[in-house]
Amino acid sequence: MMLQIILDTNVLVTAFRSSLGVSYRLLALVESGKFKLNVSTPLVAEYEEVLRRNVPSVDAPAVVDYLCGISNRHRIFYLWRPVLKDPDDDFILELAVKCGAIIVTWNTRDFRKASLFGVEVMTPRDFLKKIGELQ
Image 1 (tube, rainbow, N blue to C red):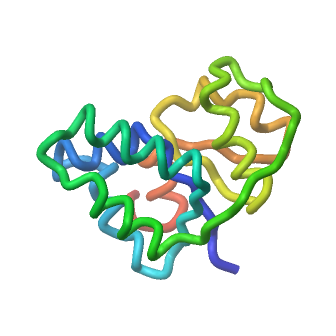
Image 2: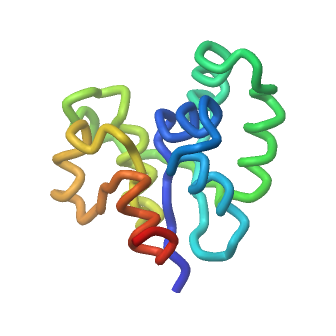
């Protein structure tokens, strides 16, 4: 069974800021068949807004269109917010619960309560180790 993941926005921004790090390496593997990305409307909107604000040299709409084209797309209708320390991250947890995905983020502390829902949270580095791309 293919691993399902959700990229937190901070991983995407980090990948576009430097081609030398593990975030970029992870993004470069999105079509490798080793995992599948998952998105929802709120996540896609956040991707575009945050990329425009933090990485203006990137064509944010084109990136978002590409990610939508290769990702599983989900509609989320949960009403159990707020759960996390930062309520702005709850929609990511909701998506992970719906599709059984691992949340890949640099802010693992923000998702501590995800384990209550059986959701695994890890850094890009740890995820790359999990799939055998790093030692």
